[in-house]
Amino acid sequence: MKVEVLGEGGFPMGGSYQQGWDDCLDAVLSILQKAKDVNEAMKKIENLQVLVKAKKFEQIRTELGVVGELF
Image (cartoon, rainbow, N blue to C red; front, side, top):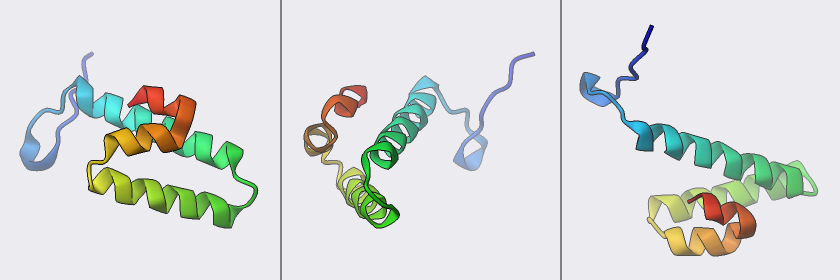
């Protein structure tokens, strides 16, 4: 049985949508694993969110290092 993910307006979401979520979760998990405490993790995730909204993908790659290869 094939399950199709529908996005806003009921339109099907493609593989890039799935890949985006995979990359996002990988980045967040990496930040959580490297952070010394919750406050540090929250700040890094907030900074990443600002960069994503600004579509600063090169800067995201730089800041995430190895994880940046996912983007």
